[in-house]
Length: 346
Image (cartoon, rainbow, N blue to C red; front, top):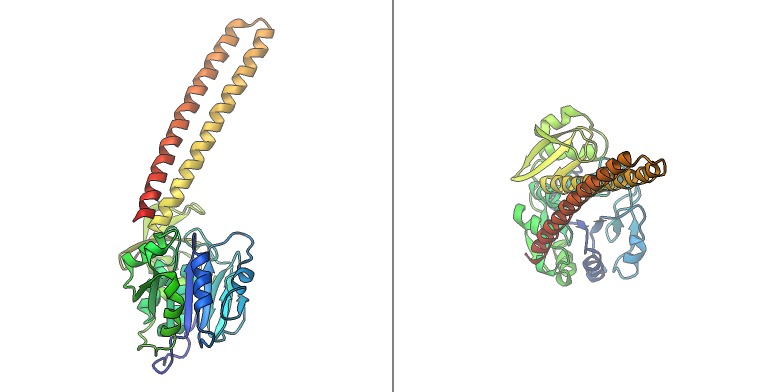
């Protein structure tokens, strides 16, 4: 992807990108409602969503500016709010919106990091990135890209967020310029958008490469080898090898087809996979126990008592195996709930 005009010194910070996930709808509504009605900046929003979404309608009821569903090829205009749609990444390129069904990032599509990176790659220091409430840490790598390209980083105050993991991650890994509660973010973004942009540093090659991957322009292992080194881990999405990327101390991974994760997202996906395997194993043991009992009934009808007794013993063994797996699942759920509650209190 190419860059926009490299001379940004006389231009304002007129590109605002906002990312949110769990617990992010309410602060997002408040921020968009509090924006100045004469704001000369374009706003772009990614909220993690399912296969269908009414987000444009919901936000449009109270927002201070017109809210539009993002469409590929749509020219970026100030005073508009562009909202990501299900199933595709929202990207920015050469003063236009680009929608692409690129590989999922952090288990999501649309994801926050691709929007943030593409904005940084195209508009450089004109960009303000804001991370709101959400689980895990989508948006952190994108904020790092924005900062490396001369832009500004903003985060919702963690104790103001319903799910503080995303703001906490941003604060841990990014030199955040402003932290504020949702009630103050609309006015803050409005003021920052009136400030002149700083000098623009060159866009790092790795940011260009990852932006191109999201746009489905650069697949393949050769690209990953420019971004990092091969790891011993496999992709939770497709099972392929993962390349390890050290992004200013934020540990990230990307597979050869483009799926991208923070280390925390990989761990989360592996935890879910392990739980699914345990549920499947417990169901298998229970079904085998039920089938063995049914077979024992048939053998009794045929007066084959010894065989029926053997089948009943096998059924009891399967029950014991199922109970062992059930306990493992119970212990696993308790650990996960404890960890999540500790993160929410932080």
